[in-house]
Length: 538
Image 1 (cartoon, rainbow, N blue to C red):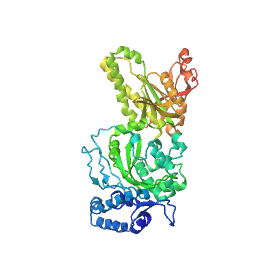
Image 2 (image 1 turned 60 degrees about the vertical axis):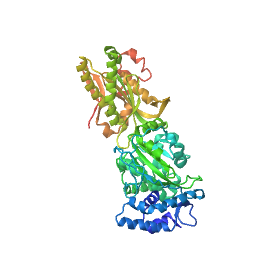
Image 3 (image 1 turned 45 degrees about the horizontal axis):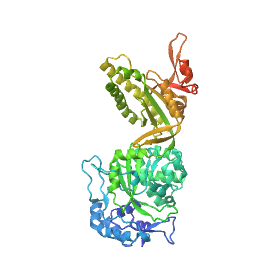
Image 4 (image 1 turned 90 degrees about the vertical axis):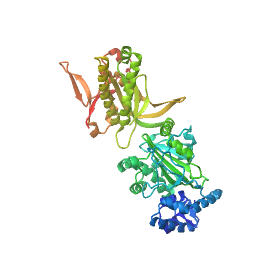
């Protein structure tokens, strides 16, 4: 028999191509076992019958004659499918699990109105070293949960830090990693993958990393990825940089598919297994879900097709984590007076108008919904690889300020008002625990700690639609960027004129005009240094 390395050397194909031939049923599943008397660090190798080399040569010849991989699979895949069934029967003795005769499901763009056909297919190439294809599943109606995922599954945010994973992922990848329960920055997925059993074999590790780098390359520049993975050592960074140049970024499809082999977990009894890896893209992050090839993927594909259902459930189940965050609290000034001046239906119309107009602004600046406290709102801004999350919060606040001017003009014209509508905004940034509270089907995200308390207090202090931030938050912004922000304190001159002094701060207590108010809410935080934000130069 030939092991996988020998087969690749004899035929000149890559490991990704070999995996693809197996996934399409052109080659039978290999028998995976520990190598005996062979050099190298691999703890598991796949073994093929010597006729596998003849099959690969036949495929190469048919490709030269102009046949597509789908046509080739139809011509010579039947015999391989039978071999796969025989291989499945040997699984208890260490053979790979069967792909089965159903083939790999066809994946199409979700923009197509036509439901995905159920017939087998050959997935299209997403690059010279990986196979992928988009998915389309419309008009599906089912009730399922992320707990029903048939294999390991995990989701990363846009910094490639783990925010959700299932028990199967813990067993396959993250077993014994205590950092999963703590600081979000320690959940660097690539760094953690380098500590798995796959890292002992360079070829296996490269195959495991390729889909992740292809997914990262779709959204992030190499500079941003290097920044994310700066914790890697020199050898790991070298592997990373070489793979980055080798893989091609995935397309714009919301879901893509890779055939892949997962090695046995370190110290486990399971042999390596062939899986279908589905990569799903969302604004909030990327989901990786594995499905054993011997199982029908109907459930998983249908589940991933319900994009809003998936992301809502995943975000609702994200693990509590310690993370850097900027908190914005915004309150409508004189809301009680406005409520008394308007009929109830018009007041609700006004509040909904503000919320609806603000939603695309929060999306633009990557704000995460926290909660609506009465007619106010709380949003969170988390670190991102290619922009400063604190600056995102400031730009978002300024955009909301401009939005309120427009809404004021509309309602003044409509109601004949002379007063302005104001959204008073408080900002702070720090490292806090982020999690969610569940009450039945209702889920509310929240940040625990002083950062949210400070932002709320500053919002109460702000007047006339002003934006105030703590000195702590502004000072965290790098100096070259901070110089673009117009911030400071308005001071009274001797002639009682107001003069705005740039790049200055003042204690919150010193800015309160009412001494009684000073002894009320801000008694303990009267010395908190704050500043007013008035603009950002582009």
